[in-house]
Amino acid sequence: MAVSIAEMILLGLLADWVFRKLRMPGLLGMLLLGVLFGPFVLDKMEPGFLAASYDLRIIALIIILLRAGFELSREVLNRVGLQALLMSFIPGLMEGGAIALIGPKFLPLTHLESAMLGFIIAAVSPAVVVPMMIGFIEKRMGAKKGIPTMILAAASLDDVIAIVIFSVFLGLYTGTSENVLMKFAGIPVSIIAGIAAGLVIGFLLIRLFEKFNPRATKRAMIVIGVSILLVRFQVMLENRGIPFAALLAVMATGFIILEKREKMAHEISSKLGKLWVFASIMLFTLVGAQVDIQLAFKTGLAGLGLIICGLIARSAGVLISLIKSPLNWPERFFAVVSYWPKATVQAAMGAVPLMAMQAAGMDPAPGNVILAVAVMSIVFTAPLGAFAIKLVGGKVLKEEAESPAFDALAESR
View 1 (cartoon, rainbow, N blue to C red):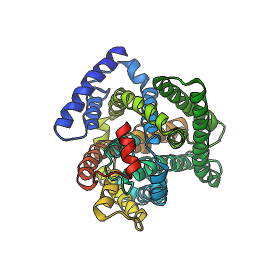
View 2: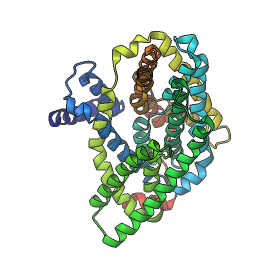
View 3: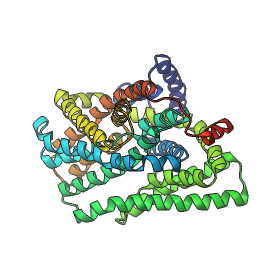
């Protein structure tokens, strides 16, 4: 495992440098590196490294979502709150619904099987979107209208809603679903519970840090440790049928520390930024390692056509969400392309229907199709979306300070 980690660090840094020199997002190089060295191409990663893949990816996601929380200004959220809320569910519902409706015309799936596929694909990738939005926030690009903050907040909620709706359709398909209304009612419950838990934990951490005054490095380590336990707590609650969005709790923890103790928040965020260099390599290479290129292309043009139809529906959903926003048309187009990338959820959830069908003694063929299209969505949208975000964002978002106070804060960092 240690050798694979060393190889991914060295080659990941090289891939990141090469792609940046080519004026492309560095994460694309790391994703492709993972695909190349993963078990489906050269198979050069050690089994222990792949076995730890889930835990390493979760830790990396926690680090980037904590950084997101430490960049969520309440002032900006107040300005973009309505649009962020609408973007958290309208685009995903339109994409998932469109795939559920037209899926049988493209692939050998029923409408219910297409619905499962639709809401696996409907989740935007925080692994791709969040670090790129944080990059824009740090450069103060689009700061006046809070565009990156709006997308960052909405994308995090988008995942929660897509995963819960997918679990409802999976339960209906395998005959294990409980009350469907209760499942849907669990969406706002999980969101509220996650945010509330994060706020409480954030307050407690502030008190702890002020009482014992540990160094910023130790504060960052404590925050990461607590966040990992939150994810574990989510699993325990879900086993008891209690909905809880741990990743939202992670973001809320960072948000409340920023709100109450700005200096402390920026010190912790600075340490997390250094950890992200390592975590990003682990995240993107391991996501790439999940991609079975041959399986992806088995769906052929039909699978690709269905994915494109879903993206068209998602894009329309983004534009509908922004109807009354102050964004101009180029800025709205930036929001559209920012919602294209798929990676993290699709890599984690793509095989779930297949495993559920096998466990229930059902025909696994639809599960294989769902997995293949989920993988294809990563292959097609992660590079396209990351490149489009960088290209369009660089042209559309202007570098600007939010306020004199923002300038003073930037100078102090």
